[in-house]
Length: 430
Image 1 (spheres, rainbow, N blue to C red):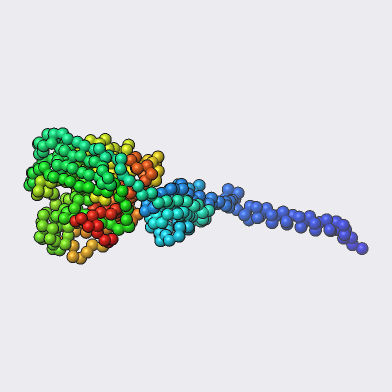
Image 2 (cartoon, one colour):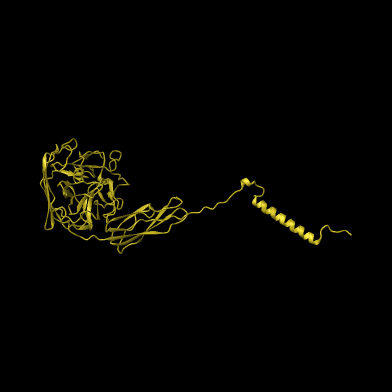
């Protein structure tokens, strides 16, 4: 009788041992990548994304008619991913038709056309995740119509101007009586001027008889009235010198026939901002009309300097034909907040994107040469179509509509937003 090498008990033990050994080998194979060298082991890492954080900016309080500008600059992403932006004007006061200038750009703007609460929300995306929504509240209020009486009602100046091209007394007086602001002036500037006559301006500065009266209770309207030239000055600087930003120069469609005084062509030549024509203006952006009238087309630098105008203060420099004040260059960055930093105001005019086929060649006359080269784009700058806005000023802490002389087109306002009389009659709304 042959005996089995294994007993039943030993056989079971052997089978268990083999099973354990095979399992160990399989596990070892898996851990060692089935024979791969330990130096070639691969590791799988999991990348985590942090959601971006939207920041629509601080709440604002503004006056009706203001351009509200918002920026997503303070939005962040911990992973430094590039962000995309999604703006939404989620709440409007009753009657408002305001629209955002862009839903997807880095910044956006709108005009507050009605008093009340506006809410704008912002969400940003880092290509993987959306942020939570951040909202900003803009509270818009009306400006209480008031009087400008008591502000510069006793301004006067009488001194000799020894500039070679003047050699005359500069005389001006502003007074207030009843409901009118009265101006009496001889039109002679109170600061140094350029050489007149000159090669591009053959006229001599002479004394004028200036007598104007403006309302002490100006009323802002929804219509703009264009002034200048035969329609009358858009206003006067405090020194009694006229503001008349347009020119009498023009070109026909061919561009071959141009005149600096004819004003008969379809394309009206600007005095500033190009090199196509030279009107003989001096460092004050002024020159002399054929009748001897020294007048400003842009920033009256000499007068601004005399008034101490710089980036530390808002400087009032004159009165517009509708009775509202005019300031030079700097205004509060937040129109309703006189504690906000000052900034250089910019006009809201841009060069046209589509050039008319009837325009003289841009190769001869660069864009910007003619008034027709510019178009008003609401919200593209700080100011409205008349280079004005509603806001607080040092002289009017409760807020008032006011204009600016700017370094950008249109330099000085070409229209007024308040009620005016043209030829003794108030014009109908335009």
